[in-house]
Image (cartoon, rainbow, N blue to C red):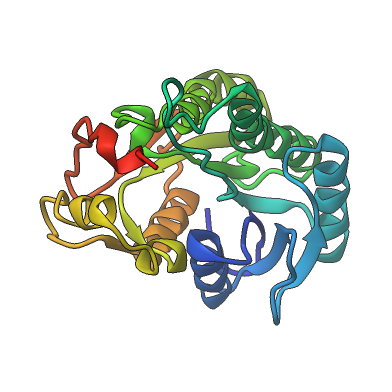
Length: 252
């Protein structure tokens, strides 16, 4: 698929990996719209809480009316909610767990459903394709450390829905792909301090550094161009594998 001149939607495009991807796709000639809670200077914007399907659907329709049906849709929205579940230092209860699932897992489904309805009505390209929807997971879904049960479960749900959605959406010529990033230099991570953060930085094998946001953005663009990438979860992590972690990181 050729990206230049096509429409793209980036959910979570106001910050972090989403912002880097939105700017990179724009630099490649795409007409980019952002779904987030905060506007983005210079880009089309529609406000929505990703966990609310009605809001997400309205945002997708609004951006599609401005730029046409999207050929590339990216979701980078997410929330953490980490901590121990039991004992005197417990921070995670059922309500925390529920919110993490709503934003990460249900939110991903909401965008896929809303975008898929619009994309399925668009004219196919010469190969019968109508574009790709890219979700963002995490390597924590495969190797969650102590204290990440809600996040691991939520992102694991994103991984698990990738193949069945790809199989379903194939009849519309729409691909579904998930990226599972490792440690990346986003403002939130770069500004974090403490022994766990120092430990995480030391775990990347090669390159021996956290990923750059533009490297995530480049992967998104490559997925858009490469029609054989479908129904799969791609690790983007510099060979990082998450060790178990430590209890005392969560002690108060």
